[in-house]
Length: 294
Image 1 (cartoon, rainbow, N blue to C red):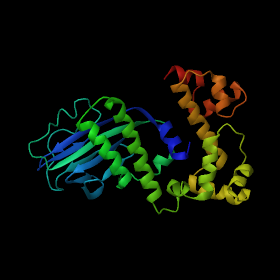
Image 2 (image 1 turned 45 degrees about the vertical axis):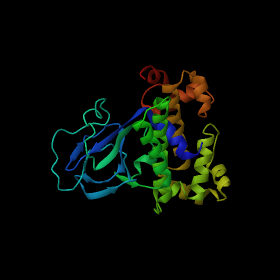
Image 3 (image 1 turned 120 degrees about the vertical axis):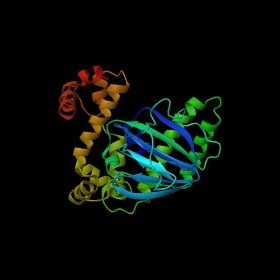
Image 4 (image 1 turned 90 degrees about the vertical axis):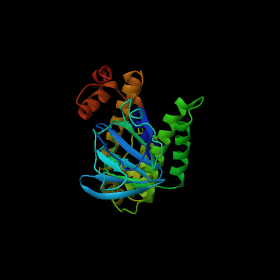
């Protein structure tokens, strides 16, 4: 897997939720924080404003996608001055769409939803608290998603979650590849040296990597490579490798019934004992107890 695909596969859990909501002016709706999840808003038709307590209002137009990595609360409204009435709503609530029946003359149509996340990767922590993106790939995914929500057909129950995951990958790809930042993960994923090393680590985390071997794959000597990797990723190469191994092991313990010895080998440990000790240092509990608690 490439790095972004691998990260999304590990972080995403549960079933993403989404509702298509039509609004008639004047309107203003507060959305409650969603702990342990990332929220999103997609403008399908019309315009609206995104209002946050700690930032200036932002006008949104059809095709805009807003991603809130930490699931923070916010307000959508037809105008910044429209008063907010009623209780804050939660897109995770099963009756969310029912509570917002389509008006006779909608002025704005949105998709409101959330992704449940776990083992949040530093890539996601490196994002700003509000990500605003748009682009042809995103519009294509949104069009397909909106069509399945508007007219459910045979297979829609399988397609909607898949399209929501597609939307997540597109919006992360759009932000990271479109950013001109020279530090952090936006730079790490586009820097040829760091990106090459990350691809190797994610492709084969069980390999007994050394800094010198990773440096050789990038064409740099050991010291310049280690300095560059640490500056962009935020951790030295082998520290990141250990963290990723333990994150991958946690996913395998939760999502599979593979024996501990098999998981140990898949993340680079020759013995179950050595794996258990490393896992306990990382997660504060033994692998078996972690699995039973899932």
